[in-house]
Length: 423
Image: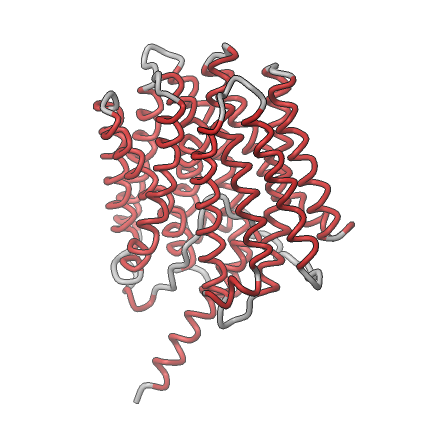
């Protein structure tokens, strides 16, 4: 992994700064919206707008890159992100924030596509899995560090918006000056959703449900904190804890995934996540328990993403895995768009902040119920016939997903060769 870091340090450092900017603006808007007097449902639309843009960017970015190249796309869109972050506090109008979030979601998605294709070009078959893992870790560290940066100034001023704008602007420099050559760009044509659903109903339904869980966590946790009367320091700690949990248990759950029935593990993980929601909903007044609930939800929700991909791959031929990845991302994106809006609507009712946890609990319960149902209608694959688990995060684009699929295929083929060569 150290060799991967040395060869791609500029890209990884740039991604860290980009995630720092993204993590800051997401949490900061939730806090600033409360100070500006925006109601919860209005803020939920602002948060959903990011996922609308992100989904659009993941679909349109490949064509943009083919037309004008990686460098121009990366530089232009990163500059746009920097500008929008400055405009948020300058024009605190809800409809402008919605447009800004759509634009930022679009730009970040396209920037991720560009960076991930560079990462793939910098890696080879021997270290592609390590490169992907390091990329994920850097992304998470950037979001966690962003929460700490919220404590350097008051949220009612401009400074906290200037910091992520500057971070994104600086991120462009090391990447554009040190990464060469520009990689060729190709993506696989997505599999139709109908065909994908026929291969893995649980993979499709589960990804839609998980989109709602993750977007509620990523988009509405700061809004929840503001509505619940938490201080800025408490909100930043609360949001960071979701992502700390995601890193801590991603690999242990992945290890289990390669050794037990994946549907059973999906059910168990969802039950634990449901329990975390109940803790937050019933005992959220105690800040320590609130952090425990955030840790548990993050630790369960993020590995579920990789679990569902691995489960889907178990029913696909190797040549179909890359095509399926685009459909899974699209389904997840649809769920992500709806998540914050439904959460905001529930928080705006008599439920108040508890609506945040109730919505997530309902989604975990739906995952448990559907995975349990699918266990009764399709026979379980023997563990030795299942494919490899590759850690992935819900912020991944189609490029990162295809890198993961390539790594999973290579791992499976190596395992098959080892079995054939065993006397």
